[in-house]
Image (cartoon, rainbow, N blue to C red; front, side, top):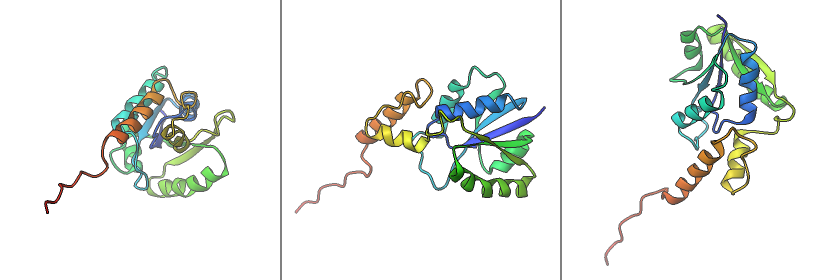
Length: 173
């Protein structure tokens, strides 16, 4: 059985992500979407929310499952018996960022990375742009799977109503 892992933070999952997973599912016997942590990113949505949202978006693909990556990606891949890591590329900048990671993953585990070029109709969609649009009240529902727009908007509303630092007690004079 040929197993591929598609890792990412997916904060939030977009239609571009779903397209890459759908296409990878046609190439591999099983595809596991790995919800991963990135030390340089602070996610809007928690890992379980991202996992559940992606699982709903791909529930029509029986050979796809979505899991949280508990640690190092190559260990996750090795434990699953993955033969490949799959990454989507929107353009040259993505390749520039992904190539060193692919080389390191191969060095650490022997697992190759397969790059799939984004569908041109979806190449402009990035999770960071979706978050920025939503942060300012813009429309995102045509960029993400059904229900994900509500999750993102709810997360921003929750941030607005939750103080970022606890109030300090007033000093008496």
